[in-house]
Length: 135
Image (cartoon, rainbow, N blue to C red; front, top):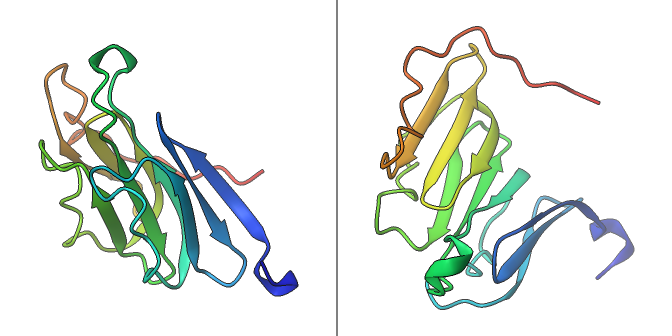
């Protein structure tokens, strides 16, 4: 990895991991059975997240999420519950990935969610006034 492309963020799924380089590109390693490591074309990414399927399912399927500098969200990998359906998301400032769902925090403090709602994990429409914490 060239010195100007050092890793600035990392995320781990059950059987894969991803890293965001300082130049905005993304690298991935590990199991790619559902395309979760197909991040080579991603550019201008400022944050990454990796979801995974419950350890006891032993499916190895998971997904990867990338937040771009323009506030849009990329997602690849296992999409059985729509957890990669982030193409219409805008003005996002932070992302998170669960086993079968994806969350995005918008600049206005509202939260977007997509994917499985088996346990109510995407029922976030009433969430407002949230802000990303910078450390």
